[in-house]
Length: 309
Image 1 (tube, helix red, strand yellow):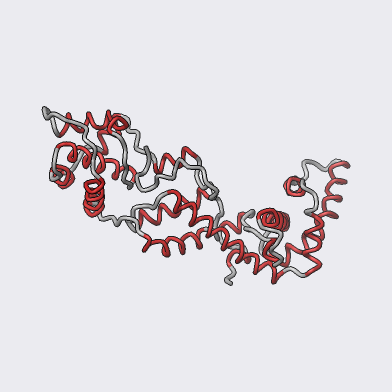
Image 2 (cartoon, rainbow, N blue to C red; image 1 turned 60 degrees about the vertical axis):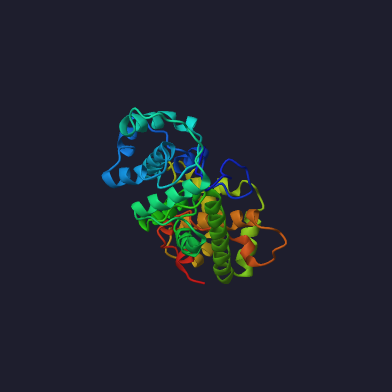
């Protein structure tokens, strides 16, 4: 079973896949404690034990104890059948409720949500609500200017939520938010690049990318010569002739970047966005996606990345 606030984790949908199955489980799956982790997270402090003991009935007290331990491990709350937490349940019963007869009764939704609120308050956290969505979207908008890798964006958002002690939203919420942030960034960069490129430059890029293997060839062109033999030097001269038109474009758009990295960046930008947008959109922004192929752009040094609308 997974995070109780996100029943759609196992569903396949059309949203951007931002995490692998293993990464999703790490964030949203029920903790799978070994003996050492069980001792670490399910050993309660005085206030934690007092909270668990205050719940009505043994089954609710055991449930609360487990939720406290799982929250300390993942800062999340879970809904699960007792069989999925059998070893954890046995540990809790032996440690805190010895010699008491336990029946795995179903926990009501009311009791579960009351416990969520009390546990979050105990650790100084706030439960996720739509009121935080605007703040999280603003963070995502800044993060995608540094790196468009979905896993990186998720990690940064989770770090921000933990820093502000907010229980993270469900996976589907993150999918939607990140997809929208990437789309907005694509549009922002599209407008910037449209202002930089003239008709001649756009035509040159379009002609270059008419072939499907252009990007793989450009990746090869970024490599330095292996030696100074005649054939290698002939290849270098051919490479220079092919790159000169792109260099002139890249020098305009990314003057601070190394020439070959800038060329690859601009070309990749053009290619990816052409493939990822609809032909019905005739604005120049349909020819632009994200420009994060160079080390400089990843730190925000690229003029395309750091420019404001």
